[in-house]
Length: 171
Image 1 (cartoon, helix red, strand yellow):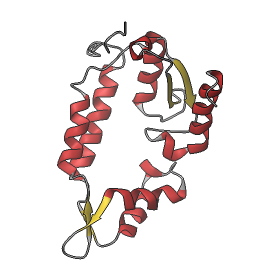
Image 2 (spheres, helix red, strand yellow):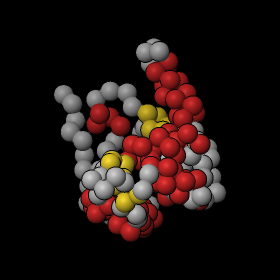
Image 3 (cartoon, helix red, strand yellow):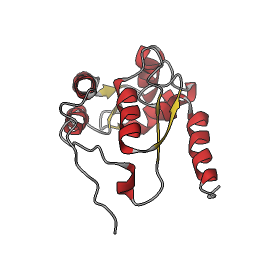
């Protein structure tokens, strides 16, 4: 029999307040971000000069701009996901209380995260390490990454996944 994924409140956990503040900052950023652009290159150029995206692979900025924008009727571009919706998604994360043990998935699972020991890393890194320990996950931290580690160090993330699959004899 498979165990249902447990919904366990993080409220009161040592990492709750830092995670809450992180999600609130993301929500605030999303609701205040630009909605309209004259070209996708405008958003890419913004990300090239922004500290939050400084670790992104260079080609990722253009790829991401193309992925999150759609043409509008004025000949410019708008966010595909309206900023208010994006903000609400970050806020909704605070209500989910999703902190399941690895065994709840009914098969092998590995948690790949940013490294909580990196200076200036996101609070989610420390929370993920705690989840790995408390939930008995196989765990690997990718150094020098933040919230979007697959965009910052895709090859390291790929190798972390492939090493897990090789261990399971799937690769």
